[in-house]
Image (cartoon, rainbow, N blue to C red; front, side):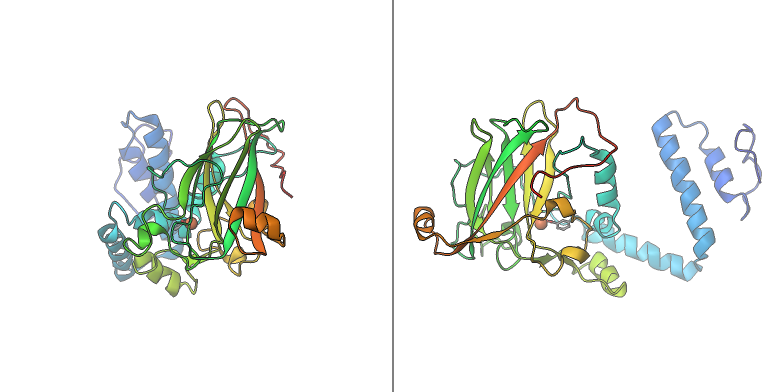
Length: 311
Ligand code: BEZ
Ligand code: FE
């Protein structure tokens, strides 16, 4: 075993026993401290992994072929690397570490590949379902700070799949552009509302190497039904999150591990003919009400955990 603190350590020949130390020592002149930390750790863990698994050359070539196929299928609109990170739980782990929040702040989850940056801005009340297909849904709520005070002027960037489980960008020419997406702004009392349709569960893109890997692992590619939100206001931490429907069969087996108990909303059936008529909905209809709680930018994380104002 070589001594990692010895400046000449690792200058010997590479052996099975000293492999990680030799590689780490070779990088000792790296002037980027963070890069050195990251690469030293990556080498240490990767060598430990290889020593544990002992892949043959042929097996390692299969890994290389998988990574090559992952690169080949990746384009500006198809990000297979992110899917790989998602199905390994790495995206959610990094999200958890990078978004430690004070108690009570709304929890975050994955962004996913279907956000578009130029969605239309709408007045509250707009129906974001542009093709009239699906089961009507009323979404109401408020944006507040961690003391429960309303945040006026917060933006809520919303997007979701339709009732067949497809986003508009996956069905260009079938769904209208910007179907089921839009940006809303909270009023003076922090309130927002819009009309939509109930989202449906859907598979993550599964026709590439990540889909093949899921199949080989005996896993399905489905995400439980959800609505995406990015909620932002000046002086507050932006929150990228979802609301999940409570009755979805895939809630416990999300392909990308994005479900958090505090993000499962109460989608209620409302039987109110007058309200339905006001909204232009058939009676009864489904409604969900949700309070987004934003942490001030300077608020420190609370190790004691996170609360939930919607429980
Ligand atoms: C999504 O929710 O849109 C999504 C997240 C991760 C992978 C694929 C889709
Ligand atoms: Fe999604």
